Image 1: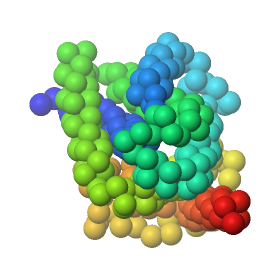
Image 2: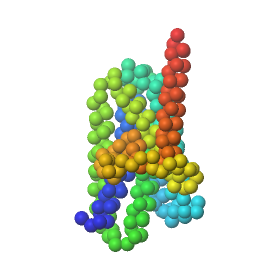
Image 3: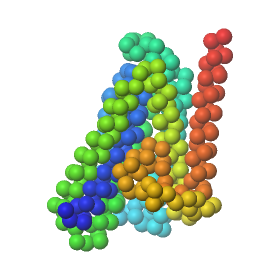
Image 4: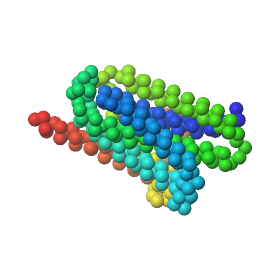
Length: 277
């Protein structure tokens, strides 16, 4: 296998895996929400179209904001995704019990589910847009470095897409096997960690753009124990924001996101409890 083919396969696998995990977790968490498939599909299409626009604007994005365009673009997309995932978890903290209790008749009994579906479009669309745009720019760099044949890159890309989609689907299928009484707890925790991991990545991009101080770089280094480029490292990076060499500011963003989302969930639960007294 040529180096370019292997490099392309790894890059595409990582990006597709991240998008597939996000889509899988959100899809599993809303499996009983009416109309969610249409919104998931719409989000996927919107993300792909956005990635196509990014591909056509590669040179412009690369030069934007004095060479830090991609970092700012990623930070912006991730920030919106964190907000959407936070809202999803807060929404589910008040509606999850209803969804579980009425799993078979949710379409008729929980009309509020329709408002949740708009969040699906945004989260899925942003996930596909971010990973797709990163893939485009990474592959653009490989091609620009020379010595890469289009055939090898296409073959590597196909391998990466297939492998990433399979691993993402396996995680999704595993979530669906969880008993209903534990299902919403499990998916809520996963979405919470997913949002915190994204917040950590926002900090990383802003540090790279010299907008935020790193505070300490790195806080620790677990590359020898669990390399971030290994399959396990990639999965953990996608699921919980694992970083083998995180900066101090990343930890601050991670903990802050966890605290804010959990506080929001608890507040909604208290409000719901008070309204039922």
